Length: 427
Image (cartoon, rainbow, N blue to C red; front, side, top):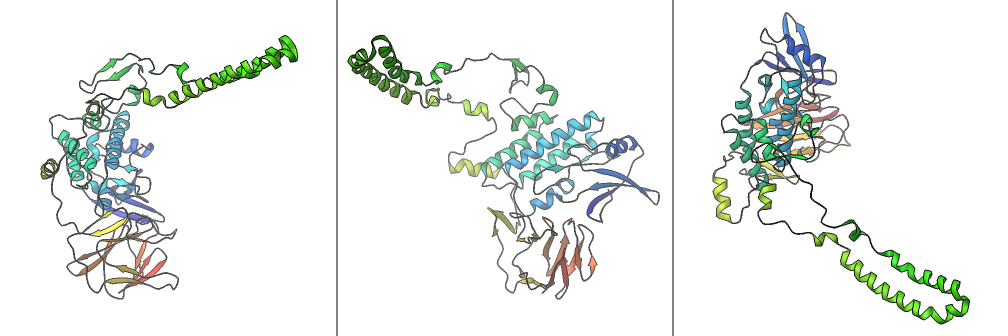
């Protein structure tokens, strides 16, 4: 598949050369409708060639993001759920899932919101289940093996995809074990007295259980405190001042007893949650079927032996801190020397090194409105230093030449680099 990239003013595009003669219907559906979860699409005819333009402005490929960090269980869940919803949407437009590119290089995400955008190519025919299995295998290798929740979820999804004739509902049951999977909009509109059985997948009738704590028990008996003023008023109305003077002590005594009883009742009922029956043993496994407990170290090590090992990882991040792994600090670091007095130099202590304004992802935060969240990446390969524009909005200029989005260029000592309007010299 012929794929290129292009920048037009402040919009960036991934361009796919159209192939196939039976793509007219899909082109019209994509161009005439913005389908949630798919990249925005338009068609251009150039020199008798049909080009598909996908807008990727302010987005980054999933593969690029995971080159510098691990994926979390919440992100895996969001991705699987997003793919499921896209499949529902395209089905209403009579589009085929085989036309979706599942390579992490072409799954674009917004680093700020975490939203994913898939690429559907008219005329393309792939094996979607096999491609999804390959994607899950890739994600399994990108989880932090110290994060047990992420490891268990990624491994469970991958194992499920190995089964014959698996479907998206089988994967969703692992994300939503209580109701046996994510429900479509039609299923959500059905009778609320039915629930999906996790074991069979069938919707069954359920009985509404009465509340454990009756409504009256939740009400505090504040009205008992009104006995004193009501009793005093009654005595005064019945016998005047003489009756009030002779009977007020009895009224006060009864009121004191009622106050003590009221305080005891309040203390007993102040926390109704304590009266609820604790869940029976074994309920945890019913609520979270894919969760596994690591009770001792040998079990954990045995489980990790089943995981694909990550090798040659130069670095990873944890809590916004860069940790160097299996690499030694280099002596005589290169740096980007600022050509603007108000801006500090950028020391390049390791590679890959990402510069942008997105905290937590970029290795150096360049806080400027003109700089993209992930703007450029610097790499070292066999003593050569490479700079790649990361689909930036306002572009990157090296020695006076504007780079195309996602373009890569070799840097030499003394080269001038403009990251948007921030000027540096590579030394």
